[in-house]
Image 1 (cartoon, one colour):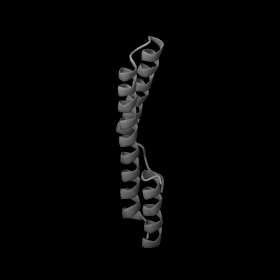
Image 2 (image 1 turned 90 degrees about the horizontal axis):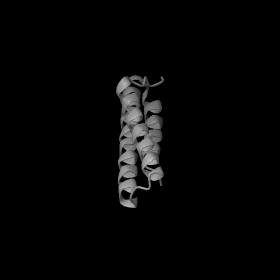
Image 3 (image 1 turned 180 degrees about the vertical axis):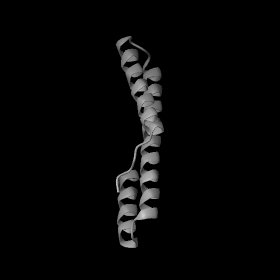
Image 4 (image 1 turned 90 degrees about the vertical axis):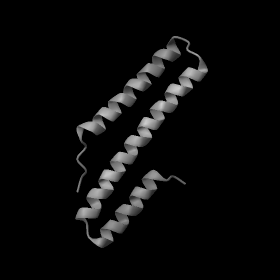
Length: 85
């Protein structure tokens, strides 16, 4: 089963895109390093949250619809997506 991406997920991604576009403008304008890094950190944080939302929604859907063997495999895949070793 494929996850249906909702409007709130798209909005989160658009916000992150706006943040990155802002960083590009800051760099072109010669903004302070500290300010650029602060905005990059904010963009990274918003993308990390979006990843968490997408994985959580997919996992929730999987737990409700898959059989037990498939659930374990999907849970392992979700963990690998979130935790990179």
